[in-house]
Amino acid sequence: MDRLDKVLANLGYGTRKEVKSLIKSGVVKVNGMLARDNSLKIDPANCKIEVAGDNIEYRKNIYILMNKPEGVVSATFDNFDETVIDILEPEYQAFKPFPVGRLDKDTRGLLIITNDGELNHRLISPKNHVDKVYYAEIDKSLDEYDVNRFKNGIVLKDGYKCMPALLHIMESGSDGSRVKVIIQEGKFHQIKRMFNSLGKNVVYLRRIQFGPIKLEDSLDEGKYRELSKEEIEKIKKI
Ligand code: URA
Image (cartoon, rainbow, N blue to C red; front, side, top):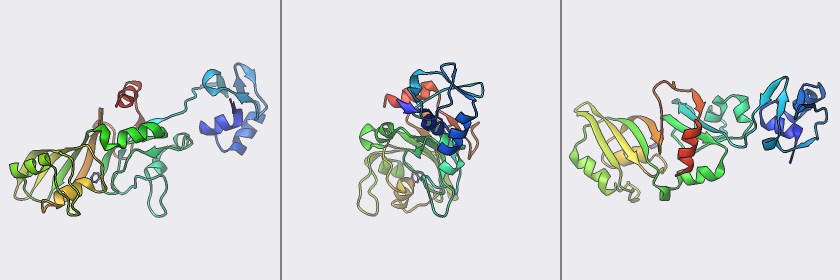
């Protein structure tokens, strides 16, 4: 059981103080009865809450898919830069969500944001072999030799041997290459460091898939949406 004011604040109806005056103003109903007591104890998952005539759907967890833009950091707070959480509407921020893993500030693309800590652990653990698919542009040409280095596990400059990864060359020439890379780990700057150890540089990086979740073309950079029920079921099976 939770206090009514806390539940409404968690749902994004304002600060505890704002929510108290909302309740006092007589627009909140619980199971059809007017509720004027902000300390009323309710079971939010099993009661009907209405605010100004709107039915409220209570949920504990949120699952968001964002097309992260360049220049924004994957963190809940930053002293200097805008974060992916700053982009969210206050009604989502109220759930205290955090990004699942990180994308570099200059990397774009698919980022899952949730407040489900258990799912987060499962998704980022390399033990679970979750495929992360990236589209990348590289400053130099690539060939079968590079594909095999990825397949056999690239050794980074600090001596760490990466898990086998898939490099698919879409286009390669003297002015650079366009590739798809699939990795199952998520080490700091991993893709950039993998190409660096081949003597090449990543000039553009965008994540396009995370496990079974794909980034659709219609979701513009900087935009986000909630994952569908089916998508949530799929990632919970990982
Ligand atoms: N690899 C990188 O180098 N950067 C990212 O943001 C993600 C994977």
